[in-house]
Image (cartoon, rainbow, N blue to C red; front, side):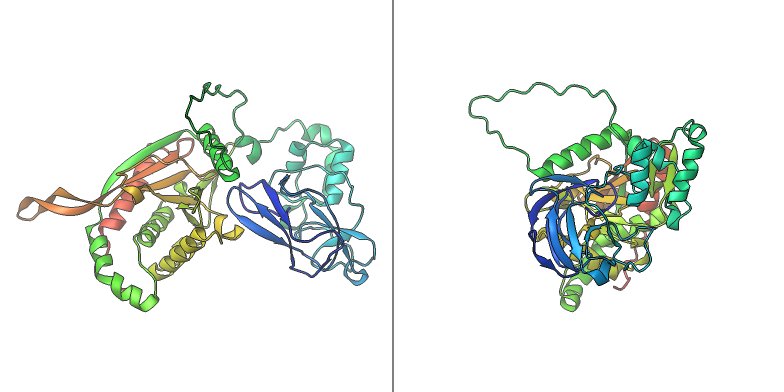
Length: 428
């Protein structure tokens, strides 16, 4: 089961496209899988014959588990024997092996299972299993291989000094985001005559668990600010018809908010971060997710990668493309992974504002209320006047472990400055 993105640790096998005995070309889809984020097909990394499937349809499988055995041709793996597919990033390849990293070997090899983002070769995991090394121990071994991966020599050196090494505990991301041991008991609920009982679908169950986890992990604080977006509204009204005629698609307010959010994240990088135990990871890339509703009512968050590097036209194109893919259930795993900050439009159905739940492992989420005309006091050289302006309330929910009220307030204030100074004469 390949890695499907940050925070996704398992997937459900929904349908086997190929059956044992079938011939498979490289990149042929083998199986359909589903996560709480998206459904997709998994392609074969090699050409060969499907010997065995390891799980049934409906099974939930952890990332990194072997789900199928493929027999490759002798010129592919250097042997006519059965081969086990492993992730392409393996750091130990035998001479003559192709880049697909398919190695001969028994399919029943016992390994240590890892929920961390770090890759371990089957050899390293088998040694760890044999020597009784826990996953927590393995995660703290210093690796000298490519991209810091642990080699056989690294593990053998660790074993020699195991007593000293095991005296230094380590906090992994998985443990830092785990739910508390003791949870409050849920209230007892009874159904009355005439009540309709509807079972949550798979995605709604996973969303529910993710939301509860986020509230347990992060102490949420929400700050609010009112912003005058009159210039922005008038600009869109002026350009929308020409934009539709030229680009054959609509220009919405969303790309403008994403543009401002990305600039504010560049100015205040502490909001573009994640927490790993007592470490703060300041993200280099600014990847902004935008919460979108699926046709079945569930929520998904497509991600605009490197949003700070795109102009308004590029952001508008990305927003429309991802929104259309979400509505038609055609999002790919890459479309919904890698987010560092999220925006949710609370005003879609008229909500003035709200306090959204942080999308873990991020540390903040921006809520957009409805844009409404309001009488506002304006300061002019001739004195204060009351004018009708287009106003919006922005809310920022943030993780109080690392984002204090000052930083959260400064972020919202920067958003206000950027939006209220929007150039009504700009071109797109």
